[in-house]
Length: 306
Image 1 (tube, rainbow, N blue to C red):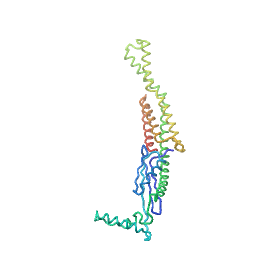
Image 2: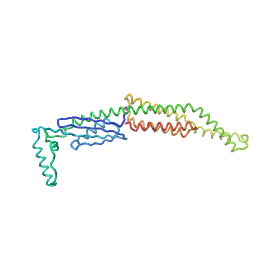
Image 3: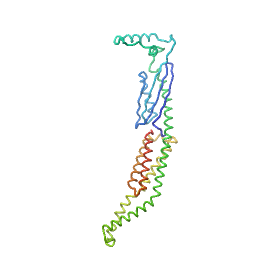
Image 4: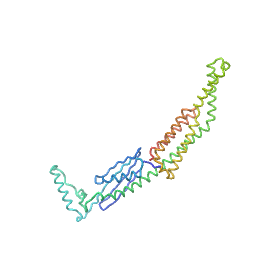
């Protein structure tokens, strides 16, 4: 499955003690990079959240934000007097060092651990945090899947344009080769005339054969792009298979699709560079430039794929 690394998911879970809000924000990264922002009383939940994300996500920089809102009760009988007295003793102790310390507000006192009802423990918020994380993760994965399908469609569109350019070059190659042969013949004639002003009658068979072999070798190395075009066809076939796997959801067991695509586009770009260096005419040069542009556009899209 091809998934984008850019997505967002948010959820909320309620308990008798209050509510937990959780957000996942994912952006591009070469590796899985997790960052947590949460209250100190929920810091013990970092390990299970990290395990949850590691099982579900291969790559991406994910910021995890967890918020905690305690429920304020208005029933006077629900107030724990012992906890309030503990807060009062702490306040007096602080005033011995900082005499001007302002007294806590009512909302702050009611939010003090244990003031309203039973004393909290590490397990008090565990189920709520994990429930919110599961919902937020499902949202984020759905968004990553949708964006991944859009990226796959954009890459497939550029791949069709690459195939069209390659096919056009193949169809034009016989004519381009003929034109290049004619230019080569004129060049060879001029070279021979320059070397032997008396004309061909002054050239021995061995000398002429050596000159022709040398020029023919240069010609073959210069304009024979059949191998590069063949490899581009092979890379396009592999790309088509990757995209088909993304749309059918059968690509998940073959590693990171983003890394595979990035490697594939590097190879395609190498072939386009070689094609440009061997260009025997302006048309092939332009075709190589078009290929490099299309491949770079696909590679930019692949940077956002997990």
